Length: 196
Image (cartoon, rainbow, N blue to C red; front, top):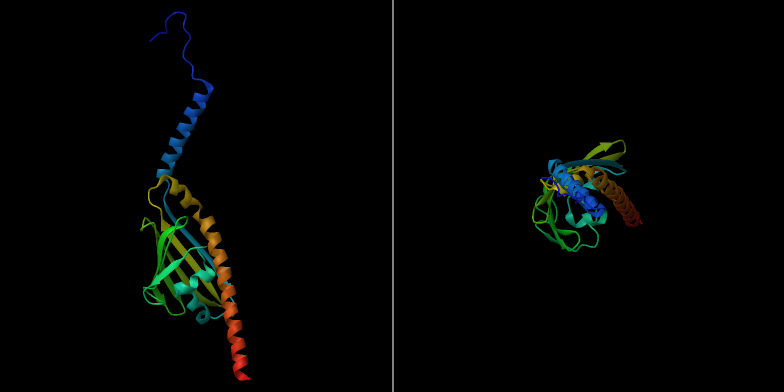
C-alpha cells in the first residue's frame, strides 16, 4: 500500500530496532538451546597413596561424603543402612534445592555406584567410583553422567558440565586423599600407642 502524498515512510526508532534485534537473538538462543543435548558425562581420577581398603569406607558411607565432597551449608538426613546399597542422604535447601543421594551397589574395595535425584527427580545424576591398585597407591576414577532433558537453558549448562563438575570432582578427590592420609596417620599413631 502506498503512503499518502506528503507523508514520510515509517521507520523504526533506534530503541525499537535494538529491542527487536534482542528479541530475535533471544528466540534464536532458545531454539538452539532446545536442539542442544541435555546429556553430560564427566570423568576425573587421582592416585591416593593408600590401599583400596583404606579408601573404600569413605566411598560407601554417605555420612562421610561431607568430609570430602561437601554440599556446603546443607543439613542432611540419612536413611537406610549406614553404608552400602540403600544407604542414602537427603537434603532440602533454598539455594541448592532438594535432593537425595543413594548408593545403588558396591563391590568391596573396588567400586561404588550411586544415584543423585534433584528437584523431585527432574534432574538425575548417576555416578561410579572405581578403585584400582596403581604402584604403591590406588587410582580412584570418578565418573558421573546426567541428563537435564529438553530444557533450552540447561542444554547450554550441559555443555559446560565437563569444566564445572570436573573442577568440583578434582577438588573432592584431593580432599579424599587428605582424609585417607589423616586416617592412616591416626591409625599409625594408635598402633604406636598400643605397642607402648
